[in-house]
Image (cartoon, rainbow, N blue to C red; front, side):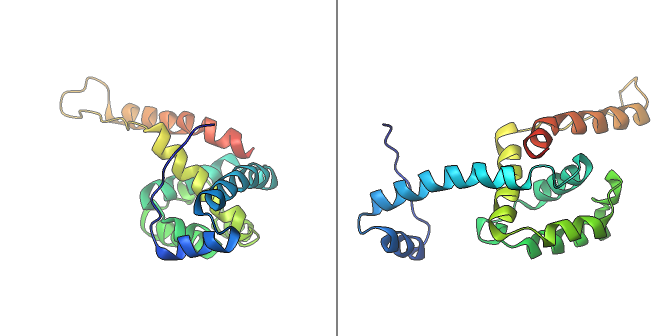
Length: 167
């Protein structure tokens, strides 16, 4: 058994743990173990719900916002954010996704499904640490259009692992 220590961000978290067990370490262990199983089950529940292009648009929205854990459980956060990102950056239509159809799918998510989807995508970006292509347009012998095209191919292949989780 490995030992870890964690910092609780707010007194409310400690109070919630006390509702589970009067020993904070035991309560934390229970929550962590439960979460790992709940995470796996939740991924199975939403597997196949989203197309690869829908997941890609959600992934790039989440990459740009880095949502706090407190809002991840709200499908409405995801919906509002995607609507705004579509207006300003065409983050949904850039991937040939119908925003209304995507919103309809997100509206059907439970709070756990919304949280796990956003957490998995956020974790993917954090752990992957994808280095974006940084073309030197001034000195590049390759036309800019080819660099942009290869950047889009790289983005798509970078997300293959993430898409497989939910497909």
